[in-house]
Image 1 (cartoon, rainbow, N blue to C red):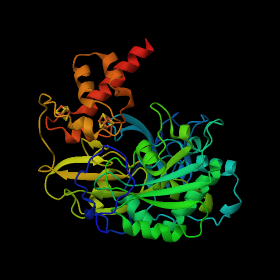
Image 2 (spheres, rainbow, N blue to C red; image 1 turned 30 degrees about the vertical axis):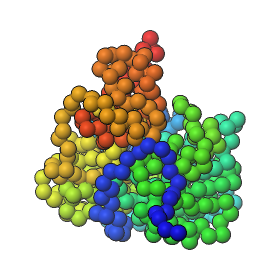
Image 3 (spheres, rainbow, N blue to C red; image 1 turned 180 degrees about the vertical axis):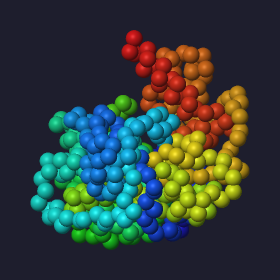
Image 4 (tube, helix red, strand yellow; image 1 turned 45 degrees about the vertical axis):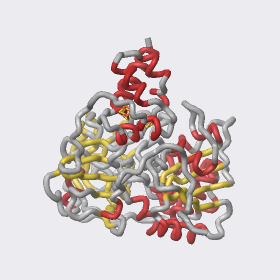
Length: 441
Ligand code: SF4
Ligand code: SF4
């Protein structure tokens, strides 16, 4: 028998140029400590934190510096030892002003003092409490507080925890490196997640372009009851929650529902490792692995960067720009945020900085729809993106909703494939805002 191996997947999606070879071979190294760190008090979906420090205070590495009493919230911690210089608003990666604790780091930074805790004896509630106290949030970008995700509704028990190890966004390689360099910690993090929700099954889903990671993680998972490593087709957005759940379990999350509806919990690679660090070492989430890459970066790398580090420090650490930068993106090119400058600080959800040269930035201008149907073919949610756009252009919000605007999770496949350069996601965002405003009336 011959032919290509087939792997689990979903219907729709696209195959953008992946460009992962720029950084996938680069071992994780620590990023430099910047001259000032800017730690946003809110880095999660949920209630904002109040500062626990004031200008002039001394803070130690890992000290809690912002917290909230609200359940849906996650505290923030100092990513350096130093002096609090200010508490002020700076422009964050979304362009909105964010309140930050500004710290001037000491010239010499201490190593984090790891505790040596027995994680085998932790109860589900203890794991949730540790996740909360350590400020854990989803590190794939959405930044939902982890302890909340680990508290599914009582009538929706979770039987399967899935680690989203696809890393389906082009360019990014940080999860790939973490799997290669810390497979044991990833598997132990998954086991803690399983214990927290009392799930018997854990699946680590890895795309087929990372077979070395598959081998490493399979090695670490050997003999661990209920833990499986599964290989997925290389396709964007294979790592989107609903697509991943369907590909790995055949279960379909209904529109508007969460993974717990079908007994699943999905967590990112970085989050699982951070939970292991919090439980085994007592380490809060104040630094993360991210990728600085793109043809516009001289020396692409995977860096362990402290939360609050300005993008500019990381770009300098990678040799600076190569040529004229056309676009600086925080996150991956499909779902990331274009940056007007390089001042925004790294947050817990920052998976990468991608710099595209001006030649690579597609400057096509929007034209009329030619009714080719490509956007419909690629939409993984089976929506009609072209119809949504037409409805938005006519300000017919009820029709935009009928064609599925609210079910769109903004993956960008439709815009990527459209020969008429129609920015569907922008239209969808407008539709969502208008529909929400109408519902509030
Ligand atoms: S309509 Fe939404 S979900 Fe469908 S391809 Fe476009 S961005 Fe993705
Ligand atoms: S891909 Fe673009 S041109 Fe083709 S049907 Fe969709 S919106 Fe129209």
